[in-house]
Length: 157
Image (cartoon, rainbow, N blue to C red; front, side):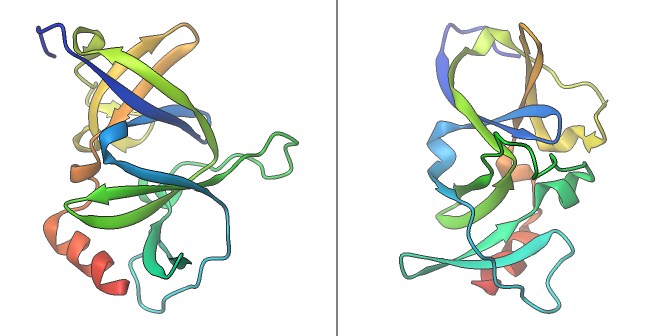
C-alpha cells in the first residue's frame, strides 16, 4: 500500500470474532460501557447518545453498520465499551466488544483490502495487516459515513 518506512499506531479492538484497528490519532479516548439514551427516528446503526462529562456524543453500533454478530456478553472477560473518535472535529462513539491493545504498524505491512471481508464493504477498510493469529482490519473512519450521514449523526448531539 505504501512504500515509505513510516510507522503509525493503531488502537485495536474486537467486534464479533474479528480484530479491527483505527489510527490512534483519530481516537479521543476509550470509555467503559454506560447507558445510552435512544433517539427516535435515528438511523438504524445509531444506538443513541451519551453524556460524557457534559458533552453529548452520538454512539454508533458498528455491529449493525457492518451486519456482524456481537460477542456474547455472558463471557467472563467481556470488556466492552466505547471508543470516542474525532472525525473532522466532531466526536462520535463506536461500540466495541473488547479493547485489544495499541500496536505499532509499518506502512509497508498494510495490504490492500479484498473486495469483501467478513461482510464489510471494502470502502470502510483502509487496509489489512497480517498477524500471527489472523488479520487486523484497519478501518477508514472517514469513510464509515458519507457527508450527509455524518451531518445527521452530528445533529443528534
